[in-house]
Length: 169
Image (cartoon, rainbow, N blue to C red; front, top):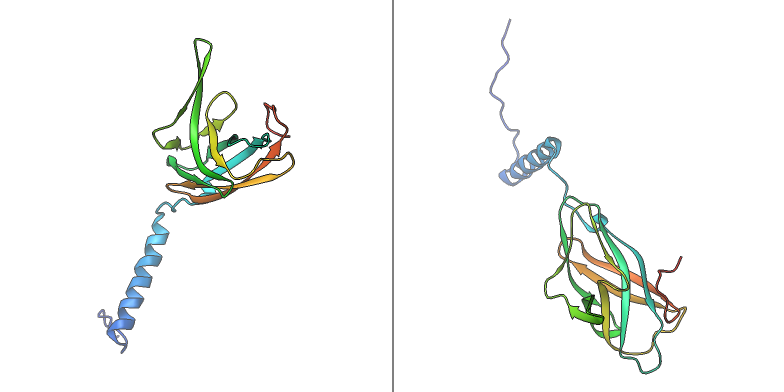
């Protein structure tokens, strides 16, 4: 009975093909180990976006929405872009002795892993400044939210009646 040769020799292939084969083999092996997948835009959900109609000549408008993070890592809103306004910032609104105070958030808005951030009337909101045209009821305003991890997410905000305090149903 003859014993099989325990030494495995590479087939006669060039070194470049051999490196490619080893790289593919290692990559396949790592996929079986169960490394966590990278999170993308699918871990962030934007819900209930809306804004109010503005009177002619208005230069500012507020926008509201809910940011839900279903992922395992915090994400941060880096910037907001839209052709409808010169600048869009996240502002907070508080009441101090009967006086309403609005302030721009100096830090990036963090959406915690497994949590949500609500931008509602009377609290955090998007402040759109330098409007290019009035917002008219029934229109839809487009903007891009840019996140540190999720990247760019396009959002459409329906424009509702002036004075509305609840999101459209």
